[in-house]
Image 1 (cartoon, rainbow, N blue to C red):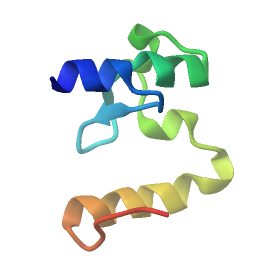
Image 2 (image 1 turned 90 degrees about the vertical axis):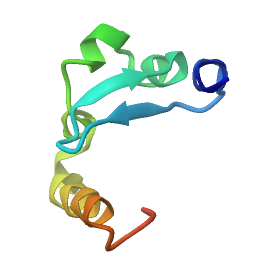
Image 3 (image 1 turned 180 degrees about the vertical axis):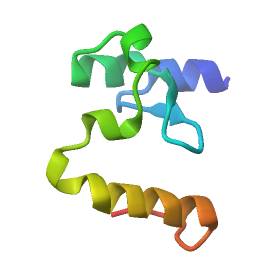
Image 4 (image 1 turned 90 degrees about the horizontal axis):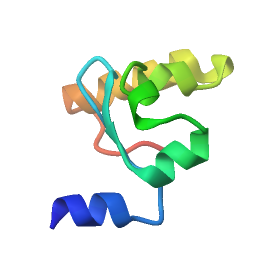
Length: 73
């Protein structure tokens, strides 16, 4: 059921590890960014974050991982 929901979602979804390395993305996300799943699997979430927001996103990511934050804006 998870796989069908993940793959059939109308929104882009990706899964990443604690360091931000992408290990799974759905077709919608791949189409949004213009990368194949294999290409995304070699990237981190910070590779497609605008340079202006890298530090902000890294801080948010760490806050979520540490439990300080349960959501992001």
